[in-house]
Every structure is written in structure tokens, then in C-alpha cells.
Image (tube, rainbow, N blue to C red):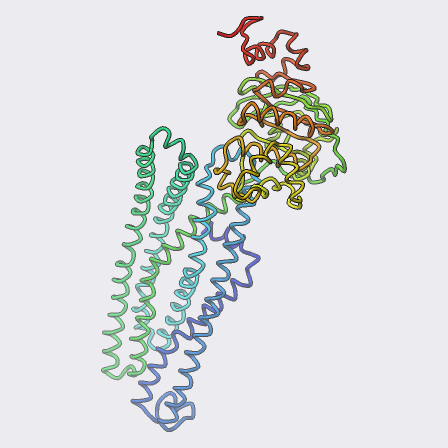
Length: 592
């Protein structure tokens, strides 16, 4: 019930639609039950004729009574059909609206959650939440909600008719209902954890499948197809086992309900028949009770299915709402600063940073990156180069200290504004499904073809693009899989160049290109870096040889700074790296 209450709070904007859909379901059930009552009235009419119930309304002849009964029957069936149509379009429309809003809210939430949150999450699990879990709730709202409401309405209405006609039989007829509800409560409590287990198993399997499909080249290159198939098989078997345990429990529900239905029907059949035979109950009333007994109790055979749908939906809803209610720390400030123009000076002041796993990267780091300069960051793996970029873009926040952009703390800027001032070319290039021109213009949707081509020229991508059959209209495939690594890298650089931001960040931007292309890109970068702050992270020192300032990082600290010639002359860490990369080990000694 706790999850249902949370869902109802979330669904407050649709409160009127929920009320209307519920009303239409109730009215439909009211007119759905009425024909059984009319059967009793018809039997009473045939037996009593001028003394029937209809005759007491002023219709004396049997012919006029039948005519009235026919008109009423037509009206009841017509109204039942109208309200069935109304509840159907309302519940289904509500299901579609809520499904769409839930999916979009969940997706937007995922886009805003802290990067640290993703460290323990898998893509497949998130996809399961966005697709399977949302669809599970939609399926319940499509049919299950109406079934549940109509079950309750029919129980109340038919129970009232029973007590009106014969209280003694009514007590015996409804006696199984509390037993059914108690059993339903037991099954609900037992099924809840089992369906949560099913959703978790589905998420884990989805995560593995998504990961394996993305990593298919690696799987094949290591000839691990059989091993991965076995692993997926184990996860699928685990999902199957979780489902089987839930199915065994839910399947036991209907046979139990049938026994209770049979007991109530027998009570009405035998006791009511005896009263009709000795004349203490009208035959018409007995007919109504016989027909209504089945209408009262038989729908409870669907209670197991309804409970099953409800528990599946609530297990999925819990996952969705838990995700929606996950808090995140990196947000827009309450009163953001509006920078009209950015020069591009960046300062790290007394900055400490510790990842969520406790690993400390920086301790009292101080660094100034002057505006309109090309600044390079070099160092070994884990020295903190990429972490500085993540902090600058506010993918993470510093544990203490601050980062300033033109003297303004970046935490005082809107995230959209901050990241709008910067263009990032990452070592791990991501291209979207679409054409080359769409990918280059991703950050500037209003860009003209001429601007796209010029950016491609500067990134040394134009030549290879023109050689493709469809040129700039070539579809790159999912994650750019139809292109080589170097081609994807050059398109990524073109995308950053086109954005024309005051700060350009290149994180191993030329790592996937050959030496000739690297040299050409370097020439282009020398041009595009003029008039903007450019930060380059590189392992290839030839890439940053002409940088204005080079900072050497080691264990989160800057241990050397200067231009290339100054650092080589110092004969320190940078000089040693330079000698290794140029084929010299030691001073003046060629590498073996």
C-alpha cells in the first residue's frame, strides 16, 4: 500500500481523470448487474401477471409489462455499453499519459543525477526501468485498475440486493468473501517480494545483454562466445526461476477461490430452493439470487490475476519512484550569476577532491590557466588530469576549495551556462545514431552546412567525409560503429570546433589518429586555439610541444611547469618522458 500511496501522490495532476474513470467503471458495473435483476422481474411477471412488480407500477396487462421491460432492458444495455466505452478510453488514456510522463521524468532524472551515482549502476538496469517497469504499470492501468474497482463495486451492489431479498441467505452467500480477502492479503504479501526479485533479475539480465552487445568485438576476439552464452543462460535461468516461484504461488490462488465460490453458490442454491418450494420466497427473487450468486462470487476467480498484475505493477513502480526520489548534489544555484562574456581564465584554489570510494585525487591544489593560452596537462595514469576536467565541467564537485572562471565560482553558474562556455573532446568518442552532419552540428543545431564543412576542414575530417558514398549525409551507425576510431575522433573535434566556445578542452583528442593526421590536426588546432583558452591532455608529448604552458602532474600535485624547452632543460620528469618518446633513454643514449 505504501507504494500505491506514493504513486497516487505522483499522479495528482491526473486526479480528475482518475475520478472520472473510476465513476465510469462503477456506473458500467451498475448497469452490468441490472440484467440479472431484470431476469427475476421477468420471471415474476410471467408467474404473477397482473400481480407482478411491474403491474404495481401501473402497467396492468402482461403485454404492456413486457413492453416496459423490453424498453428498460434496451436502455440498461445501451448505458452499460456507453460507460464501458467511457471507462475504457479514460483508463487507457490515463495509462498512456502516465506512462509517457513517468518515462520522461525518469529519463530527465537520470540526466541530472550525479556522475558518482552511475559508478554502481548499469545501462541495462536503467533501460529495464525506463522500458519494462514503466510498461508494467501501463498494463495494470489498462485493465487491472478497472477490474479491481468493478470487483469491489459488484461486491457492494450485489451484497445489498442479497440482504434486501433475504438476509439469512445473504449471510451464507457472502461468508466466503472475508476468507477470499484474507487469502488475497496473504498472497499479496507473499507475491510482493517475489516480484521484486523478478524485476531485479530482469534488470541484471538486461544489463548483461546490453554490455555484451556493446562488447561483441571483444567477445569474438577472445573467442568467448560460449562462455558468454553460458553466463547469459545462467542469468536467464535465474530470471526464469524467480518468475517460476512467483507463478507457482499465484497459480495456487484461483483453485482456492473456486472452492469458496462453490460454497457460496451451494448455500444459495439449496437454502433458496427450499424457501422457494415452501413458498416463503418468491420464484422471481430465487431466480435473481441464483444468477447474482455467480455474479457476486465468480469475479473473485480473477482476483488472483488482478493481485498478480497489481504486485507486478507495484514492484515496477517502486523501482521507478525510488529512482525519481533519488537526490543529487550537483544542481543549479538558487541565485545564479549571469556572465555575459567569458574571457576564459581558470583558477583552481586550494582544491581537495575525494571520489566516493575514498580515493583522494587532489590535496590543496592551486593552478591558474591564463585566458587565451594553450595549456597542456601531462602525467601518468591516475595523476589527476582527467579528474581536473570533470571538476571543471562540474561532473563532480570539489570536496573543498573552489574553481573560478573569470573570477566567478563555477558553482554560482547555471550548469547549462557553465558547460555552454566549454567544448570537450574526450578520448572516448561518442557519436549518436544519425548522419555525420548531424553529429558535427550536435551542439549548434542552427549551424549551416558551410559552417559544418569548415569545422570538418579544421579537424582534417572533410577529405575522408567527401570520399564516403553519401558524404555528410552518411549515417554513422550506433555509437559511430561504421567509422574507424580516427574518423570518429576527427568528427568529435569538428563538433567541438563548431561550438566556438571560449574554452576548448582536448582530452587525448589525437590518441586514435595516425601520425600524419595528428600533425595535420595539430596545425589546425594551432589556428582554432587562437583567441580562446585551450586545455590539452596528452600522452603524446609531440602533441603539446608548442603549448604556452605545460603542467606535469603526479599523484594529484603539479610537480613541474613551463614551456617545452624549459622543461627539457630542467632534466626532470618531463624531460625523461620526452627522451623515452623520442627514442632516447637517459641523456644522449639511444633506446635499445
